Image 1 (cartoon, rainbow, N blue to C red):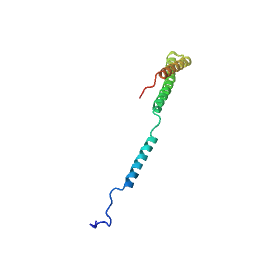
Image 2: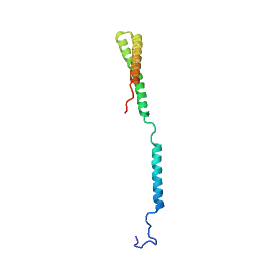
Image 3: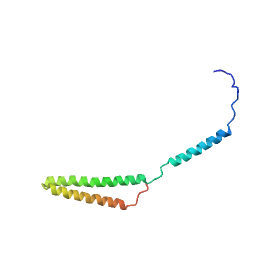
Length: 107
């Protein structure tokens, strides 16, 4: 590179640039605040819905498997399967009612 001095010396910080940087910073802060997640409880509702679905599916499938196994062992398969399904549904609804009557946790 050359050792020549530039024709004009660089000026100090310009007040307009400082004002522009301040406005840009304020605009970025407003944009971050605007794009921040609005609802805090959506994750809790999503977890509660997944728990209800898991209880319901687990109760039905568990009752069906246990009922079928008991029916296969005792040779009363259609009735044992139906009774197992019924008991699985009852247990699933009992778990759902119990979990819905508890206040939501502050996780």
